[in-house]
Picture 1 (cartoon, rainbow, N blue to C red):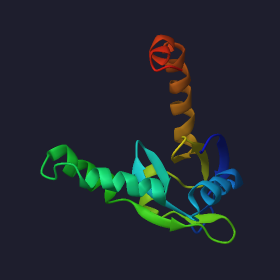
Picture 2: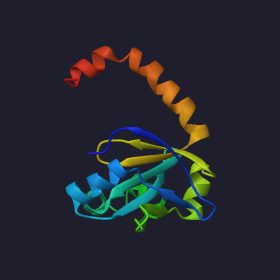
Picture 3: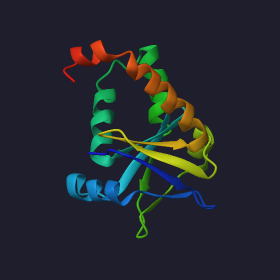
Length: 147
């Protein structure tokens, strides 16, 4: 599973090195060297192909004429791009995804258990600070979840 935070930089061609710990997880747990990357929540969400296929199966089973399902497909699914990891451990992030996430150079790659988030470093700091502040007041709710 994916965990940890890693500062990295996107090169001028839009390539991003995937942390070696994450590549090890992809190789050992998923037997794959590809990620499906899409846009959501002002950052990029990257999934191993096997995890992404589970999402597609769930979405395919939803009522296709519901407005919220169509909106989800048009935004989240339509942006999904399969990104192979090259021999140097990098993925090429498409310009449309980089633009959505505000990624120019400095990024933070965040392990989120079953997915990876890719944040512009500028956007990550306030999101992290906000999460930290909220966490202090969520003790009872986390206990209810069994954590």
